[in-house]
Length: 509
Image (cartoon, rainbow, N blue to C red):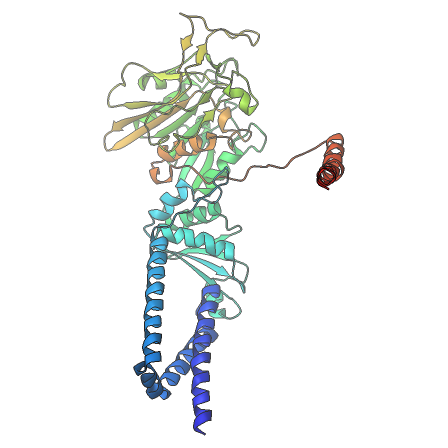
């Protein structure tokens, strides 16, 4: 009877830790304290304690003997090794370092994500309703939790938790981002989608970006190559509302406009419209003017001279050419200057390692000093191998000293002016094509456009380098190239290897 009892207690000493370990492993996998996980750990702990209690005298006797002392030394050394490894693991957890070897940095959180998540002022919950564990989302949220303790992640099985499912009106397969009473349902769970949802549930007010119309500007919702549909889509994802405004119809810049954008007007503003924009700025408004060079769009002078004069900004009557050859890297020529020189300014402070390009641009610069309380920064400058060409004929040009302006050339100006307790902001860039659907995703063009809107809207916390998307690295071959590749890889290379082996064998036999 005693033998059976001893055998049972020994078995409990083995089975107990095994059950507890199995429960811990299940929790690590599920990330949810389900009843059977708690039961496994509880039963395992109970069996282990029972085994120790019932074998207490035998355990004490064992450790008093010589073999027990040697075993105790082994246990102490093992515990010390485990403790050292635990400390190393803890330090690695607190001061971890990851290496992202992808060209686009696809697995490194963007500056935008780090700013938004790291500066959260509200608690945010990301809830995945699903039966199984979405490991990709769990890994993504682990990265987010490194940035802020205000964000949490939970996976819930809607079938096993019908009360929570009813509370959120959710079913398995849905992902929710929740902050207070606000809930956002995700269609995708990539980094950009998560960040956009976090912004939507944590920001109290939607700011409105208005686009002027009536002067053949780029279409705000246009999906064609030269439309601004991509810009509108990103602005909406970043929690802005967008609206087209006709100044003649409205009689003023609507007060609801937090930012006013004129995207490449090809026809002049009427004097009354120019006066409306000037009045809007004088009352602390925020304006972005994207003005194309006249050789690209003849008669495209927006006739905003009085507004620009009041801000001491000069539009160059030229086309900026870049002889460095950088334009060829993006399939364009010298008329597409590439700029990588950004003077210090909140819009471009995170863009020091990226370049922007402009399919055709004019110079934009300031006078010797800003008028009144205005402070200005020339945002974007081209290379030393560029110049402002004043006589572009038949697509031929050369630098003429005394007529043309030698580079670096300023392509954009940002200016602020204190007006009472408000601050008016104006940005003028000598091109609108860089932000069209065709070019917005290339190099740093998108970051320049959206950072400019963020700065004008006084959302400086959004100014950043946004998440990158994977490049298309697929190879397309003609039928002849496919045939050549097949002959080389399937026939020639194996035969060459076999022949080399046969030759070596023959020489050594």
